[in-house]
Image (tube, rainbow, N blue to C red; front, side, top):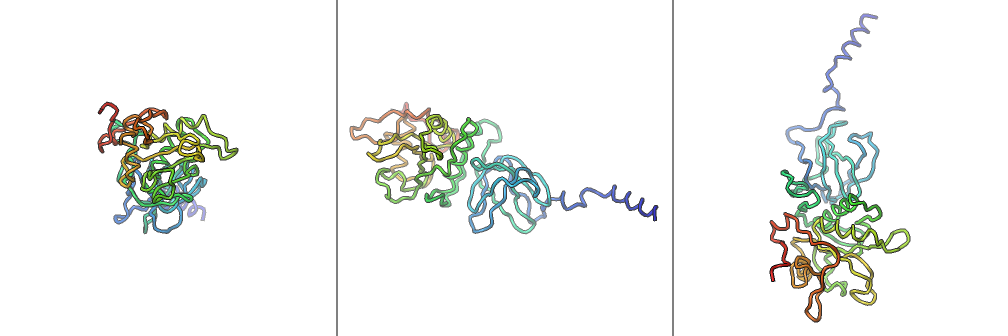
Length: 307
């Protein structure tokens, strides 16, 4: 009996590691991994359970959040194989962690075409082309498309990298797009996609976040928005202080929103985007003009010296 136990123990010690299901990834021929670090991805918009996001790859990792149906996110690292799943490190706004791509029968996430980071390193990571995904998404009581929401999440990640800690960009949304003239003070800029307004007040005491506003504006511009601070009363006696942002290159911009980018009073010309009754454009006082390579390639260039 003793010799049998020794033999069995020896066999156990020499058991190939691959025999454990915990170390294998579900990648049969019909279910290869489809994601890669440096791309956008999303949870398919069809109703389904949320994807758990964990602090470490593996089902034992602490759950730090969830990705819900239709949510777009950046894939920043991976793959890692643990517990029979392929895991990817993802970022969506302030949410960062590891999520599984699927099992051996179904993909739980799907890749989107536009990369988050360039292969050759020629463009700063913050200047990343957004995914051309126009699926409409409801965030709170606002409607945005997935392209705008991905850009907003990217802006929040930049905001936090620049030292911002207070604002959750999704929760700060006060107006989205596709409003069809509902808000007269917006003069049509929110009637299509690509438009979003953000509160700049503290969720704790409603004070104006004076120190965070410049960081928010810069983050939004680095993420591809034309973004300006609108002071209280600037758009009407009862208009609140807020940030107004238009996603550059959005295919569903309203005519008024498009004019705020490259029109007579537009961002790319160095102005504040507001039409003036006297016809004299007002200078942009909300930050530096930022032109990313992907904007230039799509025909959205610097127009300040084109007069």
